[in-house]
Image 1 (cartoon, rainbow, N blue to C red):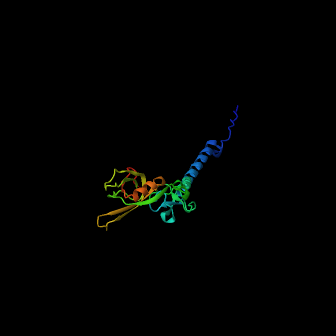
Image 2: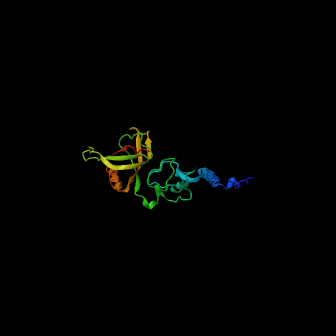
Image 3: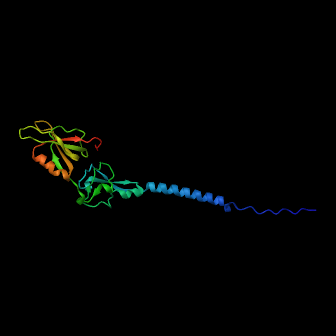
Length: 209
């Protein structure tokens, strides 16, 4: 008696295996993800960096900026670019030389809350005081008897625009500073200058550029 051969189902084609298809999909997705990351890293956009230190209240012009191509991705929209720079904007905070210029660091001229004045300190000025430094301005009023009154803080926080030293004067080094001060301090500062008060500047710790 012969036994009939057992009928076996035909083996499934390997490409029909769901696990195989899922593996192929994962490989494709991984390759595409890596490609997108590499492609986005290579894409750069032009934005502005400060060519020199820019102080609060200063009008930002093309001479103060230089164009750099950087890969910032979506964050690039938070920085000033050649396409987004509006004429006549001012700095609202100190922007150090080489720093990318954030849009939040500039505003329209009507937003200015500071102004600049020139002072001549009575004593020496620390070599640490440079453009962008934050200093306290102290005033010692001149008394009617020729004496000098007790010094007091005239401007708690002023930003230095420039420091000019003249070594040619006979009495020694003559220093003048252009500083940016809040408008609220302008009247007292002008009164001190007109009253021949002795002015001094002191660097604010931790606020050097």
